[in-house]
Image 1 (cartoon, helix red, strand yellow):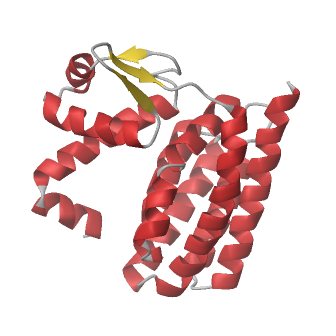
Image 2 (image 1 turned 45 degrees about the vertical axis):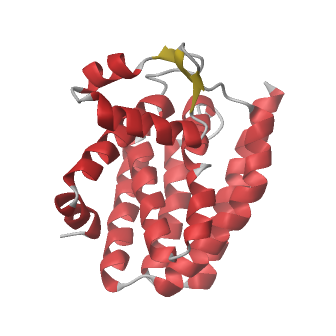
Length: 223
């Protein structure tokens, strides 16, 4: 049993909140809830088949991460995409993710190493199938594993503010600029390096991924 499953069984209310967060974040990232859309807690709770409490907690978390904006007495709004903001965020993301990849490779335990190998295989499957939804789910799993294995709560807090924005930006703009196969291969390389405990390779693979992401992001300015 993996640590996430064990934790879910010990704290079912938090698990329900996490489920609500995961589903809503994926809906935003994959533009089922598009940028600029007005949403309500009650409507989303009904759509997800959940009570309003876990949905409210998930929306509060998404608001802290900047994916939704609370409008007093008017509900919530899915935030707009901003290329300039994305580029500024990448300056921070590059440093944070290289640090986390390095630390995860040196600090991961045997169970986490196995989990990184599994998510590397998920990325490879997503790339082979050119499956965008599978890629975004694998990416979310990868980011959680990275946080757990790196054992640095300050880096984790910074990373949490960027991950959803990065996935959504890629999902919206990747066609013609970045293939699922290429993005999956870059992520798989980091996951395998961490699984192997190779800090140098993990850091190098992280730099390659961020080089790709930056080039892809800048390409959106030319259209």
